[in-house]
Length: 239
Ligand SMILES: C[S@@+](CC[C@H](N)C(=O)[O-])C[C@H]1O[C@@H](n2cnc3c(N)ncnc32)[C@H](O)[C@@H]1O
Image (cartoon, rainbow, N blue to C red; front, side):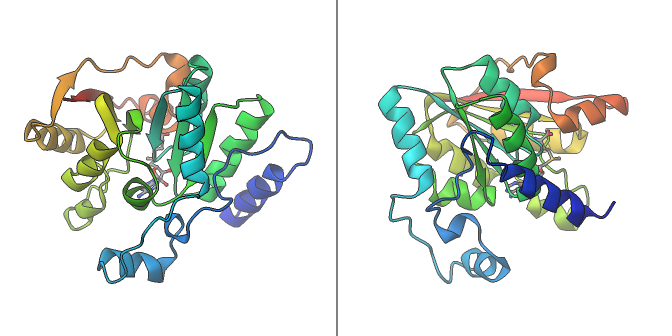
């Protein structure tokens, strides 16, 4: 079945009027969070540094969480959202923000979580690096999960990996003191790189890995475990 068909079907399901309102954060979202190719390129060259003037849906999400005294946790590169849904369900006092660039993946998970009446899970369809840099308030995050980020195994593509020092710096700014960064991957080389990046970062200290139960296994993790691959996980606390 062509991929477009899945995208159209997921987006159509999402508009089902019988579902509770979506917590997908698009309303009022600044253009930067969903940059097109040309805008991405300009931002990368810092030719047109964007500025968030506040008032967007993401800001309001964080303001509401703060007003309710709820911790916010991020799932960065949430994919089809299995972990985010299970994590939000297991911790009803939390607000979980799932950031994912593929809108069809978000649409699918959004429909499932709305059918389940999950009010503490919101989705941000965005390029994670831009969202982390420009949309999320500093020191507002209790934990961030980077679970099975794309490994980009070829050397010439390695710069596309999410778990690198510049992204760790963005996350450090967003985490509050004592906030935790959790990572998992099935890719040995990528895991070694994660450990290397964090070993050289005195702003963090090792923390006990987050023990995810069966429910909280991610979609990709289930696939990798089915292929007999080994999962590596580690966590670090912001000092
Ligand atoms: C290998 S999948 C893992 C998804 C999920 N964490 C899981 O374990 O099932 C990586 C996901 O990260 C998303 N992703 C990769 N780079 C991203 C970026 N820069 N911003 C937002 N999402 C990104 C991809 O679209 C994909 O859905």
